[in-house]
Image (tube, rainbow, N blue to C red; front, side, top):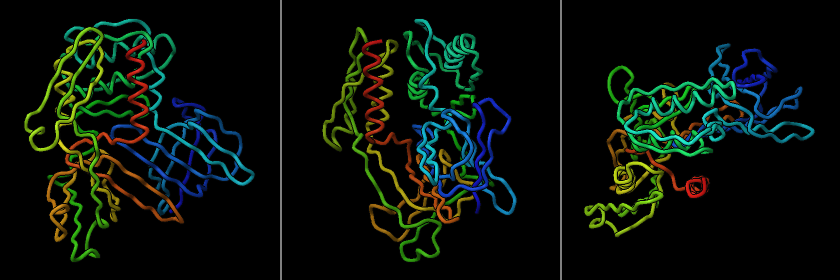
Length: 347
């Protein structure tokens, strides 16, 4: 398998700036609650710059398969090679801002985001678009300087939806990937402890994340709201958290956050041998047999994370799956949440 990258002047350009027929190695990481990252090592080439658009292709029997599109976030150059650190365009929404204070009463997410995007696109010649079928109405206030990434993530979470960006189109829906648990797209990932050589995946490892909370004190600029789940408190410990929200329907926001945290969050990680027709965000059937009481499962699973490593012409795909969307308690996500809370206090 050969890897090819193409670079463009910016995200809207269609004229190839430089095409390279060699990528020495590549690692792609995707988190359904974050964005794609791609770390590439390439030979030293003609001039490249930060924010150049980049496309990465697999070339198999002269057929090109696009596996990543985004932009150059950073790079390191030595005498022998260039290390590119790339991100998907979803990350750029951290730098698209609310340009004036806004108040929305009983409006759909489409109305809110399209209004904010129109302000930004008009002022700075951008061309972001938005798509969502959900018609639930919500009430929200936003301040000048709030970024669109946090806003979309916050509203999506409130509506039990997930979101992603393709090029410059923002897409919010119930499932980012495909539902492959029924019909012609059915996909089962099977591991049998007694016959691992006949399995579809490597031996799975189960990780439980310390994100369980069953008491939440929600606060905004003027009000507090406390919600708790008695069943979870009885089954586990009483575990509380104070969570800051923007002004709006505080009781609903607090309840939604509690509902997402009141169950133990577990994720299985394993390598998958057949990588065809499977992507992060997809729903698949996970079957683990003849293992132990901790690991034996037969249920619908959501692919929360996907890591793709290209090494010596081999492709290694590692998946993280769970029965729910899991917001992993990583240092990166903690810092991201801390930064968001600081902005809510000061903007």
